[in-house]
Length: 115
Figure (spheres, rainbow, N blue to C red):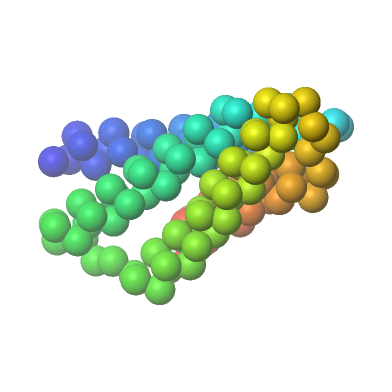
C-alpha cells in the first residue's frame, strides 16, 4: 500500500510539473497545449485516488481542503480542455485562459503544501 501511495504522489506531482512547465515554456506567447489538459486529468484522477487511499487507511483527511482543491482542479481541467480544443483548431487562445491554467495550478500546489 505504501508503494501505491508513493507512486500516486509521484504521478500527482508529475502532472503539476507538466502543467506549470508547459505554461512557463509558453509564457511569452501564452497558449494551452494538449499536454496540459492530459496533465490536468492526471492531477484529478491521482488526487481523487490519494484521498480514497487516505480514507481507507489511517490517514486523516481535511475535507474542506480536499473540496477547495477539487474545485480548483476541475476549473483547471475545464480551462485546459477549452484551451487545447482551440489550439487544435488553430484558433487563438486568450492569454487569460492560458495564464489561468498555470496560475491556478500554482495556487493549487501552494494550497497543498501550505494548508
